[in-house]
Image 1 (tube, each protein chain N blue to C red):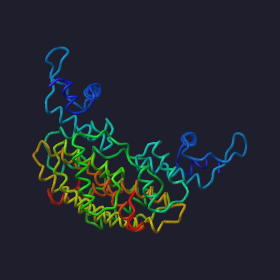
Image 2 (image 1 turned 45 degrees about the vertical axis):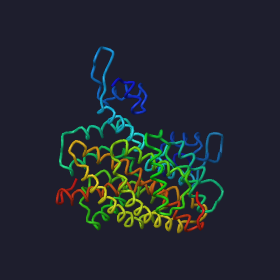
Image 3 (image 1 turned 135 degrees about the horizontal axis):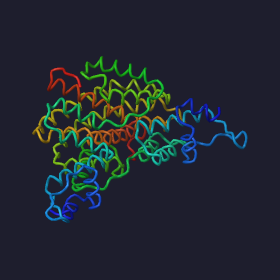
Image 4 (image 1 turned 30 degrees about the vertical axis):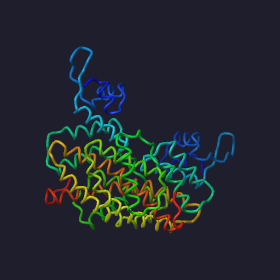
Length: 211
Length: 211
């Protein structure tokens, strides 16, 4: 198809498509003349992935580039792929707030108690410590009491996620499933948590009024 | 305290503090002479909140301004406050992808089945529909099978969250608790889910290797 058809098929404007090609997110089309390139279903699929990661996952162009590098890497064992994908989609690390050392010890203790097989340098370990230190700095250190309950919930969710990824494990789509499931799955979980908040609040405080 | 002390107490650079004052995120200090202003513990606290929302929650300056307007609003019943806070921190709405109508029906069905008292115009309803339509467009429509399990987990988390907010319900800190618990809580949940992924993957595929 021509670039106009690619644009219509994906809802992405032509200048934006050209920008993604320049930025290395999207492979160039196959040139059929000096001024015309042809695109195929692979481009449609890739454009949808780029937009999903940006629009739903909130990823930057730079982060999308890293994620796509993982998606395009030669096949690796599932467990390695998951680690590489997590590395690529880890949010940029904020400056360590006051109390980060204590928060790191809290996270280490949690991981030990749960028996989670996680390397200390996993980026989510530090992300969690930064979040906890931030809560502490805001006078909300007692949020830590919720951690075990959150961890229970996440273990259940993660088991279901892995079973889902395992079902989708044709090799060439495995990394994509991991990335999409992680990034878009975060958005799904965040939206559901907010809806459940509204319901829990309605039951607790309002006897049924909706907001 | 002077602005230099405020900067040292919070780790926020002086030009950044001045920028937040210009942008209306932070109240100006009390002028003690034409060139000197004094700041107090309220400024320290507010600066920490601004940085927490930005660094951990990933909120923009504009989003922080809206959230702080909710925090500073006159007291309201808990349930209304929660709705207002959710409105303020809702991510900017992405363009509706193909399949959004069907995804909206899926979300409506889920809310009905769970008996959640949520208004159809709640921003998280649309955010969830956009995420589901995106998954569908990427050929991952079967992710929907995970929805009920996610909803179970979120109900449990939300009950604990609301109990926590209820304990912190001195009037002047209630909105802040809601906002911080929602925004930073998302970051905590996302980090824990990724750690649980690594552990579930280790158990499932690797017999214990850590990444």
